[in-house]
Every structure is written in structure tokens, then in C-alpha cells.
Length: 233
Picture 1 (tube, rainbow, N blue to C red):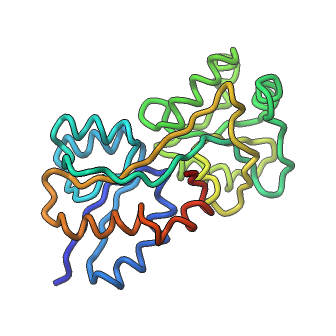
Picture 2 (picture 1 turned 90 degrees about the horizontal axis):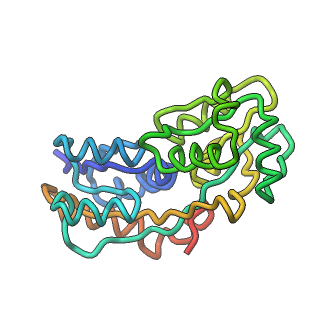
């Protein structure tokens, strides 16, 4: 029977992890059991006893969980920085989001706004705060379309048959979703740049295998693939 590697992985890294999975499985002979989702939801899952060998979440969350003893104190492995961006369907023109004023006008004119969970997801929490800072949160409430994670919200945006919808999530999730175009990162005043990091769970039953998967995710062999998918270094 092949070894089973349990992974809790932030949605921003989902596209990369799935792309690397076949090579890892072939090289290691292991089976990967990965759960993808919002960072807050993954933290809850780990704390509630979900099987976990590898945790891939924000660097800040990894540090918090290391201090709490839930993740190994071994050196953590950053994958790179991911910015939060705006998405539209590929058959629609890219909106102007270059300045706070342009972003506000674009969001105010949107028929619907798709984004991840504003309570648990890194990008969702941030985007709701952006809407509030722009004075748009209450006015746009009927047009908000939220989903448990960025990958799901972007798939729903891509499937929306009506024009005029806009999405916001981590750029990696936008680039890995067929049918979407990245309009750009949020303007500087509203920028969110998040470092995603992998670490071994304190209760991992496969620490050597976990490190092997982390080395693939965060190591030099996947650097070009990470860059193409929206990670910055």
C-alpha cells in the first residue's frame, strides 16, 4: 500500500499544487490527499484534528501555528508572494483599476462582484475592507457574490453568462481559472501582497515524505512554474 500524504493547502496555492501532484506521485509512489480552502477554515480544520502532514497557508499563519505547537518548528519554506487582483471574463474588456478613483468607478459599475469568504479567506477579508474604505460596501451589498474560497468564486465568475461581473481574489487563483483575464493587481493604496509558506505538521506521520513534497512546492525546480502562475520573489 502506498504512503498517504495529507495536505491542508490555501486556495492561492491550489493551482500550483494540483499541477505538481502528478510528478510528485510518480516520483514518490505516494498518494496525495489534499484539502484546499480559505486560510481561516484550514486553521480551524487543523485545530480540530484533521489529518495533516503538510500545511500551506500564509506565512503569518504558519508562524502563529508554529508558536502554538501545531506545526513543526523546523525552518518553514516560503513559496513566494502573491498579490490580490481583479478579474473579468476573458471575453470582456479589462476595466481601469489603476487608481483608487478608477477602481471605485469600476466596482460601482459592476453588475456583480465575486470574491471569497470575507470572514475566513485572506483575499475576501481584504476585499471587503477595500469596499468599506471606498464607501461602497453598503451600496453594493445586493451585488456581492461570496463563496468559501477564491477558486470557487472565480469558477462562478467564469460561468456567469451575463456581462458586467467582476471578481477579486489572489492573482494565482485568477491565472489558474480558465475563462478569466487578470485586469491587474489592486492599486498601491489598496495593495495586499501575501507570502505563502509550507510547513510540516507537528503530528505528521510522514515527515520525510512531507518535506519531499514541500521541497517540490517551494524549491528551485518549481520556481519558473510559480512565477508563471503569479508568485513573485
